Image (tube, one colour):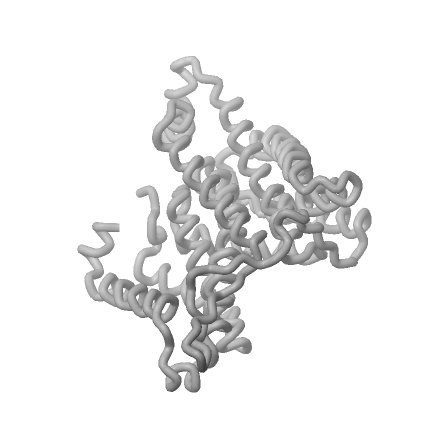
Length: 336
């Protein structure tokens, strides 16, 4: 980040000003003229928090994708199918047992097993062959989509939120001032805040494992020079299978999260695959902090765009990606 500031001081200044303006809009009491110009502050704050929590969901999907694609150099364009599969599994477990927590565990395990099969059967036979991996996984994603459509139908499914997470929580953010002078505070769904906090914890844990532990050192060394690492006695293929399984399992967890505060339906696999690609491109391949930053930017852009410029909301996301590619092609927080 410091190198980015040194090389692009103008863009860094623009980013700092944008962050300062955003913080003022969130924490300050809006004057009447501003509300007349852009609408009520409550709508703006809801869009901001929706964007942040959506960014948490995008991070869960994209972090698994960046492990598989950015670190292991495996082009897995069936990653969105793993998301939707995990969501369907989580819905089935939650509906049959009534346990929301158990749905995460089962979805992670089953999706990780599918990831192991993909790594052993597909990617191990095509190491270093990016084009073949791309074409094969596109074909697999189509097959998976048809199988899930056959098994689950074309209906919309939503995972039931547990009772202890139902309802809003009052946040210390003023949305308006009553005529009596009493402030009105923002109320926001508790389940979204809990899920976002969990995504932050997962992200920090992943960064610590990759950068502060021996297993993280082995993974990074295996990406850089797997032959030398294998010569030291490390079972590199087993390491890669476990990393692939974990990345796939994260997609399964994200499916349960998405099914909880959004919905599950055919086509969500493509949507979240594209979101993962955009997040990884913006944040930088192989970077967990980059995936977090990219997910936050894309989530906020989608939600604020859908409120203020709904016709062009999807265009804003891709404009951000094009802008990042023009200024810093390797991504905002790329490892190299």
